[in-house]
Length: 68
Image (tube, rainbow, N blue to C red):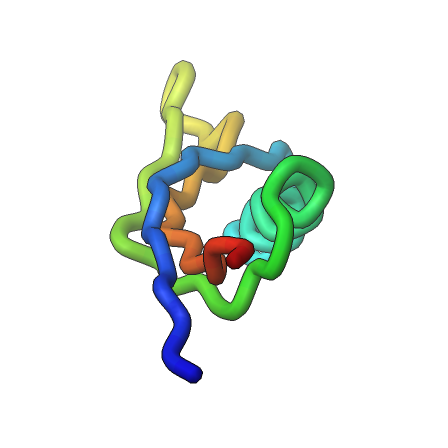
C-alpha cells in the first residue's frame, strides 16, 4: 500500500535561539497536524533592534502523511 504525503510551511520564533524556534515550530505542528513524518529548515532569520538580536525565526517545511 502506498501513502500520500503533504508539505506545509510554517514560521516559528523564539527569543532564545534558532534551536528553540525549531522546537517551538515542531511542537506546534504536531499539535495541529496528524502523522507528521519530518521537517526541514528552509530558512533562518533574526530580528535586530538597536543592534541586538531580539528574535530568532525559522521557516519550516513540515511533511505529514495524509490519512486514508
